[in-house]
Every structure is written in C-alpha cells, then in structure tokens.
Length: 320
Image (cartoon, rainbow, N blue to C red; front, top):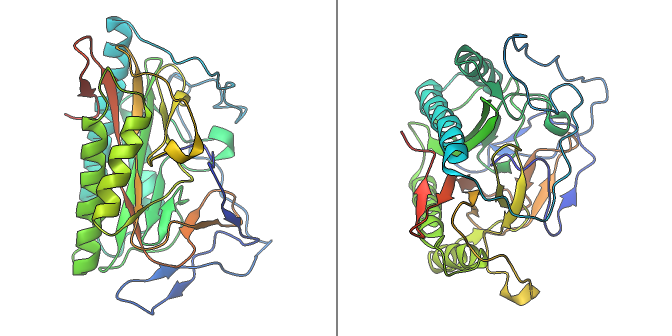
C-alpha cells in the first residue's frame, strides 16, 4: 500500500522523529511517538544503475499530477502492467523468506532493493514525493508507509512489506503482512480478517457496480468480524503512472454522498484495505510518512492490483 502520502480524512500529525521507541505493554512491541531528534538525517538513497529505466519522479521527487479521468488500458498495455505486477509479487514472495527475528527493516530494504534492480526494474517508492527507501515496512501498530530503519524484528512482531516496481514503463504494486514465529493468537486472527477483507474487495470489483461497491463489501466484512478499516489510505489506479484515478476507498462511502465511477473493462487499480484491531484513528510521525494507530493496537494489510476484464470480472495481476 504505497499511497504516496495521500491522506483521506483526518489524521493527527505528530511533531516527532521516525525513531522507533518500544513500549512492552503487550505481547508485542508498540511503535510510539518519540521526542524529536533534529540531529537525525536520512541516509542517502540506495543507488540504481544508470541502465535501468526510471519513472519521471526518480530525480525530482515530484510525480505527475493525478487527473480525475480513469485510464482504461488495451490488451497490450495490460500485458505490460501484468509483467510489472508479477515481478512485484515475485519480489514480495522473496521478502517473506527474509523476515525473521533479528533482521532489521533497513536490511530488508537493502536486500529487496538489490533484488528489484537485479531484475532490471526500479523500486517505485524510491524518491516518490521524497520517500527515502525502496520499500515500506510497517511493524505492529504501524498502519502503512513505515520507513525501514535499524530496528530489528522480534519474534512476536507482525510486519507488512509493500513492494512496488517500475518495469518496462509500467508500475506494479502489492503487499502482504507476515507474522513472525511467536505471533500471538490475536495477531494471527487479525491477519486472517485482513486477508479476507482483500478477498471480498476483489470479488466485488465487477462491471455493473460502482467502485464504491468494493469499499462497501470490505467494510461489511471487517465490521462483522469486530475490527475497523482505516479510512485515511486508499487504493488507486496504476499503470504508466504510480497513482492514477480511480480512488478505491476501503470503506462504505455512502454517507459521504460521493458518486464514484462505474467499474468498466480495461480499468486497472489496487485494492488495499488496512485493518485495525481496535480504533481506526491514526497519527503521522515527524518523518511525514509513518502512520501509526492512535490507540497503539496493531494493523494489518494485504494488497493486490486487479484488471477488469472484457467479461466484467477482476483479474488479479499480482499473482504468480
């Protein structure tokens, strides 16, 4: 779920640094709002060989302006997006083999970066709106956009790894949350609910419905299980650009009175609900990216990129 820092709704902005502070009040370590440390500077961006094709924002940090028009892609274009998505998924599966107690999220970022560039691709998050890393790693009560750093993973953690790549002119995007060996029963249940939320969202993405049907189905599933959906971060169109229309809200937007686009063949977008154990409210750390739950309870997320086929059904592009 790399959402480019876009917030939908309200979030409490912290005046804090991205330093990780651990409060062992539960069976897992919470990520909390530390005091600001102005002396800390982000390390330089990892290098990408000159031979690798880059998106337009790679040097400037400024992405193209997102328009309200929803792109619809030809079969040839979908084939290009599918290839990028399958590479993203392959890298995501590789990242799962790295997740173990003791490894730092910075080391995960370095190894995943090397895997992406070895495939001749560019890590889409790198320098997108200034993001300093090649993947996002969101641990325990971090909802999304966690910046990899020197915190070592613990056996009781869960971690979301969000992998996006730019390959042959197209972006592909997917994520998964993984539980480490000693994850408790509550954490395991959270993963199940979050995975089901993605499944029902994908199933709702059909011609004849509006995009809002996706969020309505997700919201009903998560609420019935006794959990909440984070409202601040959403799915998005994807293809030549990292983020395009349509916005794919992961909750029921009926009360907002929004008229969302009809789902049509040729659309490609991500579905990426973030599911919280308790309250849905979030805070943003001083780094401007890392989103944490305000109540300190955990969050989990799974993401696919889907294509709407000519027969009106969703094709999941991020599977191998």
